[in-house]
Image (cartoon, rainbow over all chains, first blue to last red; front, side, top):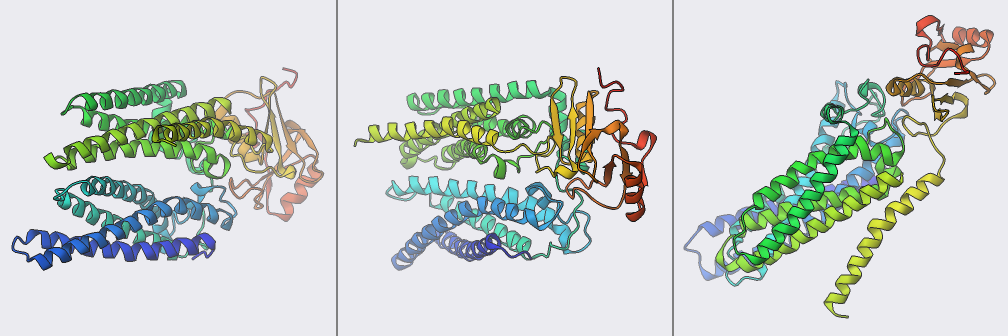
Length: 348
Length: 152
């Protein structure tokens, strides 16, 4: 175990997350059970309502902790870099334990899982938050079932994330050997990339075509979002939400490919260095563009969740205004990210 | 202030950040010292390698291994390769260098074990104290990378 300020802070957040997540799971289960009972007394109903308020408060707290723990993970990994002489960036830290036979062999898998679980937990917490905002504007609380299920899923994701991060912090890693400390060396071999599918995609399309495809798809997505938003304002039932969501989901791997293959080497001014992790210490301004891309995709996902989960007569107008706001924010995020990326790549 | 006014202020601040941050960030990065042309890490002058490409542009590297990988990926012959003599710290043409592969690692990130010397006696001394071998023929770095005639 490596003890530094970030490890202590991460450990503290992990413990808090685990406790709150357990409470959220327990209360969500209790409320779901009490909802199934049709013959509940007024006292039981009041108790259930009070539990729901406590659950909402705890979920808000868990949302805040999940948001904090996401960047904290990368700050923790960055703080581990000087502990191994061969490691030059977070990529090297993620490779610690590869080829090991002890407990350290789990470290790369744990980091990979954390990098997927953290955004997933934030996304599900966002779904809960928008549903809860809509629910607060209603008289009868028609979205209670969906909200409780979302809170339960959020609790499970946050608990899993906390357990995995706790395990990552505790497993000894200082004595682990390093196979390669930089994505430019060793494993990357001739292609120069640590990710095979990216190398295939980029070599197949070529950097120019990848750039053209990235800009066209993202511009089309922004236009699609604005058009869809306009149609939603004019008409009650506008089809095409699935198409917009599909566009955002398909644009995500293309954006990742562009950022790794074209943007990162250009911004870092290292043509053969395809590493997003290096942007954190060397070009933190570019990280904001990536955050905006993530927020744009999440906003489209949340708008879709509102469309499908808040589909009842009482919430129709509230859901429409929430969806409108989310689509507008999503489009603004995409535009901001595109402007930043264009400036970063072409000024470098 | 009405909500419309505050909305425009928020948009203005957002626009300022989105446009200003990349400009300031790029400017700041240009002010800082350039690192290795392959992986960007700080260059130790004792192990520095310089490659002058066909367009007369000079590229600096932190070790021999980085320079070799960079040149292989570039896939074109270089005008000149300059290596640093580990004894004196002087830079000289790689074609007249004595390269020794030994147990001593110059760069932990790349794991480079090849050392450059200007004189044969220094190379033999390093090889004997660190159980190394002097590289010859095709095992020498930059054999197929540098042009035969530096005047080209």
